[in-house]
Amino acid sequence: MNGVFFRRKNGAENIRKAIEYQKQAIALDPSFVRAYTELAINFTTLVEIGTFSPKEGMPPARAAAEKALSLDETLAEAHYTLARVRDFEFDWAGAEQGFKRAIELNPNLAGAHTLYAEYLSRSGRFDEALREVRLAQELDPLRTGLIGNEGLIFYHARRYDEAIAKKQIHAQLAADNPFAHLELANAYVQKGQYAEAILSYQTSIKLEETTSALIYLGRVYALSGKRNEAIAILDKLKTTEKYVSPTELAILYAALGDKEKAFASLEKAFTERDFQLTSLKVEPGYDPLRDDPRFQDLLRRVGFAP
Image (cartoon, rainbow, N blue to C red; front, side):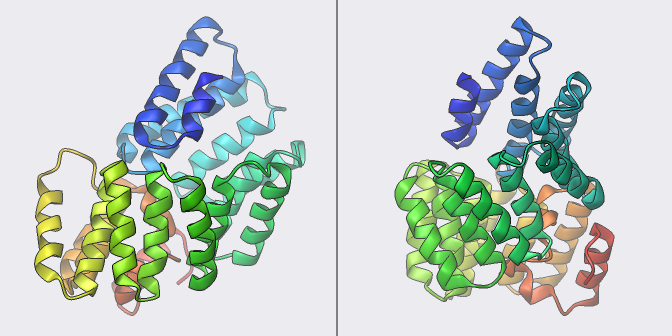
């Protein structure tokens, strides 16, 4: 399928192309189950990378996932696709049930192990996440993105040296993937390697100017004493027509020392059901806010134990 090819090339424009190919496939054959599963994955991915707001991306993602499952309840891909949708909707129990059912139906499906690993990592279950992503690597050794997935688990687990090592490999192998450079930069920040982080963020932005990359670049400017540059990015984000994750925006406000605006942004994120809240428990960017009772309350409302 051309849609799969374009999704694996990464970047919003390629994923949009993939969606168009999948819609064409469905028009030709409305019973083509895998076109629906890929369509759902692509819509959730556009939400994940901030191209679509949850309001834009999640309804068509859920519709496609539910259609796939209605066409074939024995297809593992249909179960892990709906599980991913549930994950994005903070239905933790439903998501885990779906991932496990997919793996039960097809233990050799790398995609199921990959998405389950992402879910486990954001839940703080790092040993389980590493086990799942390494199973995926064994099953699909040519998928270079899985190296990046492993690096992200190390990042969430605060094992930054290991995160950097994996993310450097991924950024080299996927040099045209803006998110590989973005996630490498995030790991550099946690080690205090601000110059390296800025260069990696700038590389990411040259490839595709996402609001996520701008937010994190603003954060490292704030942390490294370049407050004016950080505020300039904040001003740019206020005027953009692109979707800006209020969850991620809270990270920039926190780095600038403005806790009140950070929490106001997080409340907006909760109201909008912003996907990035799924990383609230493990993302280091929220550390300046963790001791505040409001943060602990938000964790409970999202469904994470503080």
